[in-house]
Image (cartoon, rainbow, N blue to C red; front, side, top):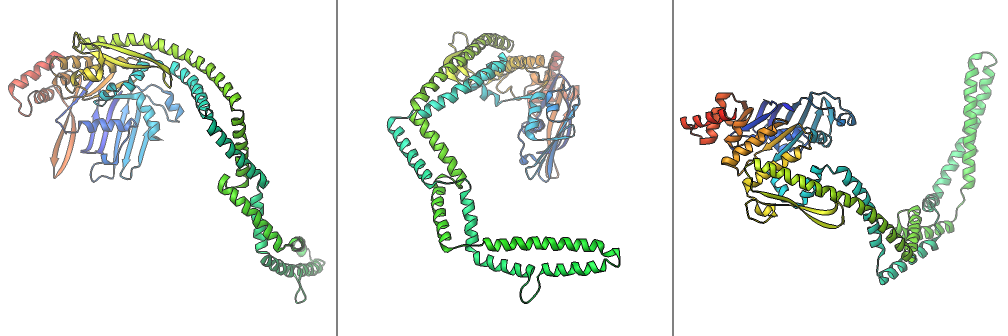
Length: 551
């Protein structure tokens, strides 16, 4: 669970440290006081998106640190090379330049890796979750999550991917006769054009290198001659080879009188041999430097042919030859398309049969789970003062699709005697809040997350329904840590721990504080929620009665 949250320079919160307990933690405050900022700070250490706009004006960075206790030894720690500690500390720093620095138990991690840990630690439910309930595209996932269908879905998806690949190949090959003839004619032309050139792998590089030599042949010849003169010598001077030979003879004379020159003689002798070897190589190069204008013209003509092919089929001869092979394969496929198409269709039939076997198993499991899901949601809704609601999972059987062969939509009737209709058409705001809470509570039973956050999910709820929602949240908090941002006194009164979020101004700056409330503080805050800014003896008495009833 989350036991400590330290916030620095997040929006109007300059610095705050909040301690949370197990059970039911409620956060209240005036509209705009900063309740959502606390949730944003928690989201940041869970690896959700964070923006530099979150940084308090005038600060260079914002930081959030969370201390989580009794954290299980998830495989995540070993997989990401992070030291495991049942008291896990997560810290995130957000800089003005957009850089984010995330640490878990002192180890640096990326935001995406942090997010994978975040979903294991906490689950945040906000008003936006209502939109996901309205969206029928999400209903199948809700049902699969409840049914714990991950393995069945993965098995089906693997088999369906084979079906999808074969369908794609068949579609590509199923062209009309005119398109088939046009495609074959184009491929034959391309094959003929490339084959006529009789290219060799790497030929273009060799020709360009030879052209470079021929274009600079005169300069090469002059340079080689000059180098030969330096090494061999000429009529005007001795070359390096002759001078080194003379040096060896002179040094050998000195070696007769002292051994001190023996090593020098050997080194100079090595130099002499090396120079002679180099001189021989340069001499041979001079002999090989034969060229003609006709050869250069021939190379230019050849490179012109290659250049035209490059513009169409690839940047090198190797790529052009690879294109040739692909064109031949493409032509073979079209010429023998009928045979290949029949083979693909036969393979598709087998793949579809295999996929249908998995799809039907998945469908059966979904329908069984839908009955249980409906019963559980109706039970929850009855506890939330909606005993007359009808709820069902409506199935539409489809062809093989990415998620199976089913479409699922949640239907309900909020009032007795009314026909079942899609949720989006019958649920009011208050009803939807309770439906969402009921569904979240049911799905949370399959979830190992230790902490649930409810961010103003009680919008549109009042009176008796509000009391039922409060009791339900308190009930959930018996098994999980619950953090709830609320504006309802019924919910605030049920909290085990109550935090007041307040905003004030000082020296032209806005600040937000988070303060744990004692019994007297809770009474005053409940009176404010009940009666507004003017607190009277009557509202104080009502607040005290609510606290007594909730204890």
